[in-house]
Length: 441
Image (tube, rainbow, N blue to C red; front, side, top):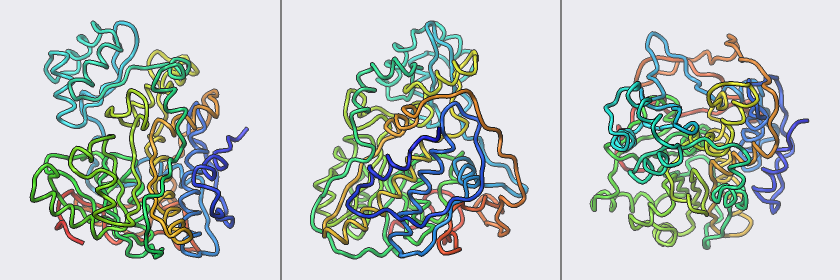
């Protein structure tokens, strides 16, 4: 039975405005997964396409299922150069004394935190030997308290009984709040979107918005890099650098925010507040601002402020454990793609577009909050199943004929799955390195 993700997403976006009904699905395909990842991919991309169609007045929207599954993975094929690895050499799953734990060490400060707790150099064999002496929950707690990112593996049942699992299950898929009076302008072309997001859900959302006309300005601190995904997530965007802990850069950011129509951010709960940019301050600086935010583990419960990523949430929420059980494997089996990131990203884009339409009908600005853990709940509640699907392969028809001149070299990108009245998205800039543009609109 096909999960009814569409109904849940429509309810989450709100019934105050009609959903776009003219969307056609073509193509077929199924990723090899123990959960309905392919259906989630199709439903979330359709939600974003439906919202952009409703906002722009397009007469016909089409989404290709096969290409939608491709866009839940890496979409770039380099020409005579090589994509960097998406993972640090230490990142991955390790067997502890009483189960499995995943270390997320892509960011240098997260790697340093994990290694400081374990007391080992950055050598995988030594890390594995040391992890084996720890209980998984104790190691998870120690790494998190040291400022790192890790997740012990839970079963579906254990997560349902966990205080954070229970808190997330009680949250809406999209939490809406009216935040003040706003202009009724609903333009998408030239919409100013200030992007404070990093790997991977938020950048997926702003990449989508850029392709359909938004002016996206991404902000990163000088110390941040994500080389494994920059060629994916910087498409279409201008990319500036600011340190929000520095007074001069905070003043620049305040000016940028005052001119923005939309803020999309993925800071942990309380982080922007600590910098002086809490919800009330943001609305005071930019009255009528549409504010869409992301958190990994939800917005309530004991882990609301915890660092998290797709691969960690898959471990915590039971997805990797259930995959291991259903395939009779001897190690965690995650989803074949980072579906929580991508699915949440397209829902964030849909929320921005729905907020624009709501602004027109209500005269109010809206905020929306989403989380990876809540999207994981949508997927797991639909039920697990025996491994189904197969690798999609690489068809000539999957790839764009045009060459994208990225900062790393020429490449081709998978054709985007959605079109409006026969036309797909058009990104104004090729993918490129971070912090190369001025912090200005």
